[in-house]
Image (cartoon, rainbow, N blue to C red; front, side):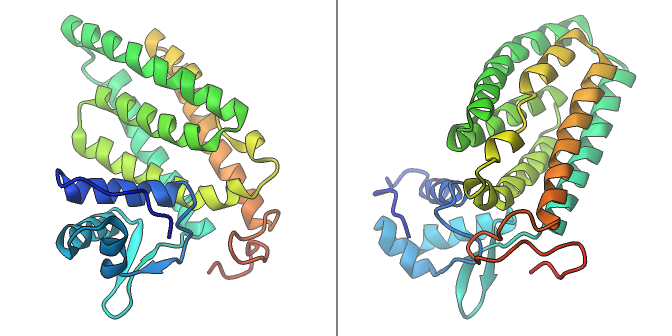
Length: 248
């Protein structure tokens, strides 16, 4: 297991959870990888209590699975899981878009806050799109997650935003091992972040819907590619199970 160095005593639980999440997103902790509280505690030189709390936090987020006798392991998502994540995400976002464009509307004060928030979100969009076009997966993941999380604050509902953030992390956890072993990965990294910000800035409902449809279609087309067995299953040396085969 790749150690990330010593962790300070402040916010220990959160720091350990963040460090392990980064290891999973970077592909250094592969799906199915098993470890114990003791191993993580020794790795970071801390007591077992904050480690156990951090691991249960990550389990609650759907990134780890716990076993009473064997410890924890990185969750293995299937293509079917990934499709469900994309579909759940699209349904929630569709409702959010309808609420913004067909609801009571924004007051002048709210619109001012909206514009100010979009300035910061636009910068994230530019960085995320640049990383996607360049095929820089590590930079893309960080900016993509920040982009969507900051964009989600415009909705004004922390529960919805938190739910969508967890779905995106889980989707990335599934996708990273495949993308790191795919020579054509750059062609499958969505980079419509700037288009979405532009459409939202203009208040153009049809344009927003078109960008989001492209976002979701892009993800589902990639899932079709996996289901067709075009990429090797990461870490197993075999092909991804096809439509008629069981997905491990």
